[in-house]
Figure 1: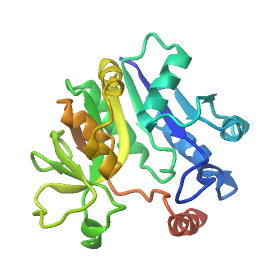
Figure 2: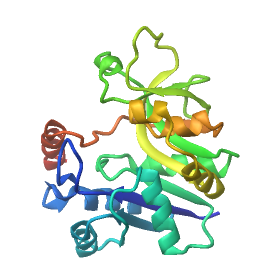
Figure 3: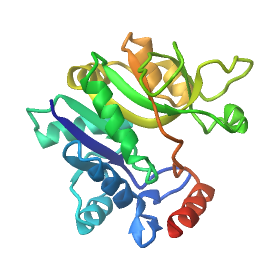
Figure 4: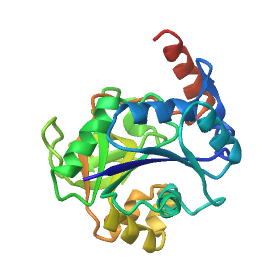
Length: 244
């Protein structure tokens, strides 16, 4: 069974414009993500970008990239468009690695791939233990609630994804990490559904899957990577990578 990794990317991020091309140790964020995904050695890696500047940067740094249309509804729509443009007929799974996760753990990418191949899961994703209570009430931190506790060997179903915890109990609540592995037919099915009110209100497209009875299984990640959403995130990660 073959896995294709596609990394969606665009320059027009609202909170940190130009984010993919910001430099960390002399290399762009998007090229760092590409190298991480490539180092997992689970299959071909392609960046799907709506900006030629991103395509040029990835190729200049030895990566593979493809130009997609401007402003698809969601990152998953961009993934599916890239899959069709690449015309890969022998792929069983597509892994969507977010373009703003240059700190993602290579072993976590490998683990998710293994769990997808050894299960009947439609969509798989990752989540990490929450060690800082502030994360529960931080709306920029996406949380996932699982039906059973997460451990190294489990791959439980997701019950819900949320930004706001409100008065919810903290049982089986984890930090959701933005990586998805789709079984091909499930990906085709997913993008055929209209965006739901809940999805649009929370800006969480995974809610569309749950609301249309598509199962999402969750694997335990080794740690929470630092995603780059704001300038503060970028500066914090810049310091960490500088001393690695």
